[in-house]
Image 1 (cartoon, rainbow, N blue to C red):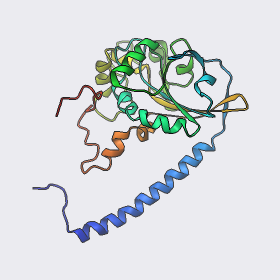
Image 2 (cartoon, one colour):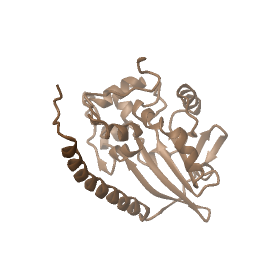
Image 3 (spheres, helix red, strand yellow):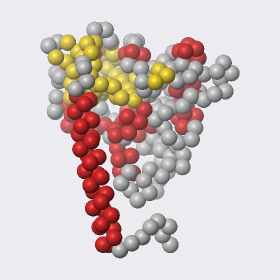
Image 4 (cartoon, rainbow, N blue to C red):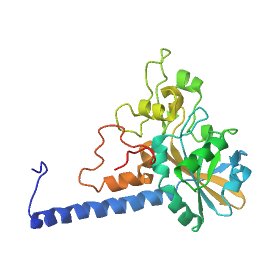
Length: 263
């Protein structure tokens, strides 16, 4: 017996047409937000960041690979992690195909993490990914773009993430930092367990997306988003939002794609 409201096809169509107007307004609003992102002032990047890539040591300009635009997904994979963040992994599952399309439309897509390159390469092989992934282990890149924080920051001054400051952790260490992009109970604890770290270490890495443009041999930072600003990149959520029961999240339900039980 269905627990949801039921009706006739005519009733469904009337409700659907009403919803269609709201969806069209949402689309128009999304277009407007995209325009406003593109109108943000550009900030010149002068620091000489260095990365380790499959092709060797690289600068930030090198990551453009001849394109004028660069999108960087800040993937939570710290040096202490035994495996990449499962949430970032679920998002990155959608990158393989889209990276090719973007590269042929003047946009390079990279993931960047602080873990050593060999650890990233092994994880990439395990999950069958082909998109480019760089290690920023030896640079300030993650710190400067607000996706990595020191233990001292975490304990003394608190972390400024997603344009707001989180309270510092107590000295007892009994409090658990929240990963605000995860709406499920105690998501930070489960994410930490799945990466083989403690919660505080896990939460010093954060997810994000940063955009850059290269113009007249000068790099500019144009946009960054964090937390639930990344929802639109998580392909599974876009499908679930159109499924009958929506996201239906009783807890931290997702796994790396090679960890699900066979069905």
